[in-house]
Amino acid sequence: MSKNLKEKIAFWIFRILSLGVLLILFWILEFIFVRGWHMLSWDFLTKMPEDGMTKGGIYPAIIGTLYLVAGSMIVAFPLGVMAGIYIHEYTLDSFFKRFIKLMTNNLAGIPSIVFGLFGMALFVNTMKFGDSIIAGSLTLGLLALPVVIRVTEEALIAIDDSFRHGSYALGATKLQTVRKVILPMAMPNIITGLILSIGRVSGETAPILFTVAAYFLPKLPTSLFDQVMALPYHLYVISTSGTKVAESRDMAYGTALVLVLFVLILNLLANALRKYLGNKVKMN
Amino acid sequence: MNKIETKNLNLYYGTFHALKGITMSVKANTVTALIGPSGCGKSTYLRLFNRMNDLIPGVKIEGDVLLDEKDIYNNKGMRIDELRKKVGMVFQKPNPFPKSIFENVAYGLRVNGMNHASFVEERVETSLKQAALWDEVKDKLKKSAFALSGGQQQRLCIARALAIEPSVLLMDEPASALDPISTAKIEDLIYELKNKYTIIIVTHNMQQAGRVSDKTAFFYLGDLIEYNDTNIIFTNPTDPNTQSYVTGRFG
Image 1 (cartoon, each protein chain N blue to C red):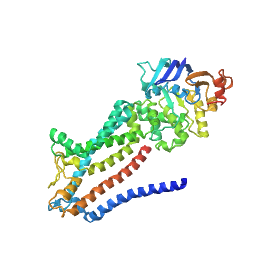
Image 2 (cartoon, one colour):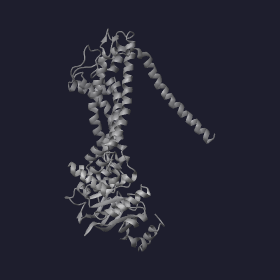
Image 3 (spheres, each protein chain N blue to C red):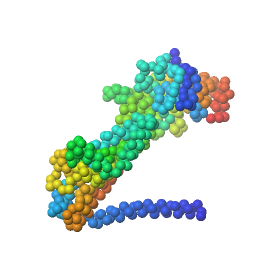
Image 4 (cartoon, one colour):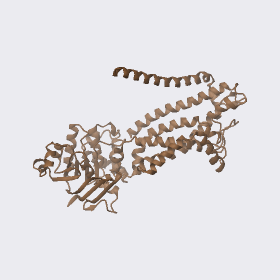
């Protein structure tokens, strides 16, 4: 077989497989959109559920997910970014550094249900937060932590050492160099990673199962120690364990569509923000 | 009085003996060129004077490095940031920060606690003039430094180094990434700056060494082979290795 023919065949195999991936993605989206689109309305987004969650809206679940996302990022962002900075900027290539990285990767590999059990044991029971936004946020924050650490580290690795050396050569300390040169340069990539991990966190069911999520609540939360409803758990509830699963089918697809749109919008936002921050860093 | 001096200086990267017993001194307000084939130790030698080698794990240094006749390594009174204020550095590849032209030059002032607005403005202007860049950038000081050409970026890096008023300027192949016109500008600049600064420049370009320097040091495999007035090194060197290198027979 000639070199050129092999090249052509390989090229087509790659192309077909890539298209296959796209096809699967569009298939899933089409499945959700076709079944959920007619549910989408202002009332659906802003009303409480009615009639055993077969009618009405999903407002409390949306609000709950927003609270949990915000809470988990407040936990994961500072911790993860600082840990990433420590690993890449402050430790030399030592046993200790490799150990931290190995443990971070292990943390990322722990099944999310284990995070849920851990969160229940530590935050709900031992620290006596009860089933609450704060317990759920801490649990989800821990889940997002390894991703944030990794993203921060990758963003720092991408920055050429010549910038660090240029700063040191002017008498700057390591902290000044990180704060004034390195972090602003790394921020677009860190923010992007952060938003992608928000997408991950907002779809998690297992970690919130025992720490915060409620089957049904007639009112919105009023404090950090209240339970909330959340989109993924709501979806699980109305499509499997409710009393009227068949009647709430439409509600389930509507909820799934909202969740997918939420993640989709976040991803687009991540892209726009990276571009915007990338330009801004160059300008000032 | 010697501005810079090393006495029996040995440097090791782990077990690799990179600089072998270098004894050499440099007078104030001169330009000294360090030449030699790649891996000969000339850049390592240059980086001794602002302690940039400290950043590399496993480096061991023996012997004395003196600035203004004071040891800069075994000296409790000499803080590393104070040293780097006195000894500026320009790198091979232009490395402006992702900030405005103004903030690039002001950076060294700010990190060293000199923040007074009018003082910073005045110093930025003076430094850009010294680096022969002022006329080209005075109307766009707030613009990104990345918008400048490579040659302009390198002069910006020189201005950035000059802003904190060092007395020594280390240049590590400052023109090797630039086109001939930008290179000529940098060389003119080096000639000008000699009046105020002591300059040590690493270069692979023999003509450049000949044009800009008063003294030239030839390094080979970690040894200082020959160190003399530049015209002697280029016209009548003592060592046959120097002769071969400056005439282009190896390296």
